[in-house]
Length: 507
Image (cartoon, rainbow, N blue to C red; front, side, top):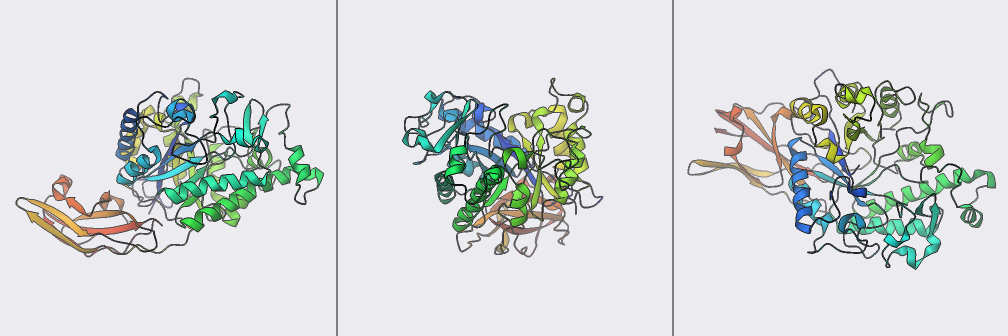
């Protein structure tokens, strides 16, 4: 059986020669970026009603493409897209930091409800250290932590950041994540590539005083190792925080696409990128993958096939060989597709389709994430047509995370067909799981005839639903005649139950 794709908000490897449309489990996600109002909300001055309408419309369009996850930014600049006692309401949501939506509603809870209703996972995207996108501190709410404890922050270039070397920074970030995981029914916590900031020419990150005060055993010439250790510690602590509350919630990272070039480290990729995770952002992604302190990785492979300094093909292969058995999805640059400023690879034909076909050569790639939602939904270069007619023709279940232990969901019981005059409904008893990990949704399979067919063929999935009732009038006309139905349950660990016995009805 072959695999498919994953998309990214704000912001795949092939197993056999079967076509990409025959993959039952595959991550298909989209980034929804909030900073600078890239995707949602599209403007800062939208009313609460307009924000909700905009999100519903976006989720409907994503569902039409059989997208099964979103990655949405909820903490872009030490602020919040949800009510928080730790950080102020986001400027990107209301136009003024600290101002709550009016009329009031909880945007994060609304998004979770609407996405889950469509059987779409919600991966919440937080930036760990960034406080501002400029040197203008006037945009900060007077209740911001900056004004309560300025010693936690540094200015680098024209932006402000938490100082990653402070114990208090790690403690505060863990408190933020703990609050979100505890209060919201999310599917994952997600960070992108912004750990230590990208280098500013001619300027050293201002952490010398912190390093001297608390070197934690690192020698003066080992400051880079100390910086990496700062990030390593917070990553490991966050994994512990998440799993202590809800062990099924994943912790994923979407790093810059190059760990290290092989002229610097023989373990690195055959690239010559000007930025490297390990050396410039102090993010040792391979350590996290090897030790299991993250659950999945989404390298941002935002370059075309054949690019001299960073070839998509070389990097897709390299990450496939260096994922240490953890779930690997690829970040694709939907925003570049068809851009007049891009080179010919992105303007002629469809570079993303070429990359999706190439992913089929790498079985370790289990999906893709597209940056960003707005450009993805514009159907540039006919991308959505290609997905709906080929790659994402059928629904897909998100891959089981191999870094997280979990058991199969309980089996739905008492499947039956109930007649109501000329109408007929497929029904089953709701599944109630124990231990806080409830059923995420049900999968309904349909087969022509009186026998149950291949449960691994996604063409036999007619729908995913959070309800325990299906109106059989909605079934595709191709099922006219005898049709057999089977139902399974998918729990929050993404494990599928044993299927029900089949029931048959003539449609």
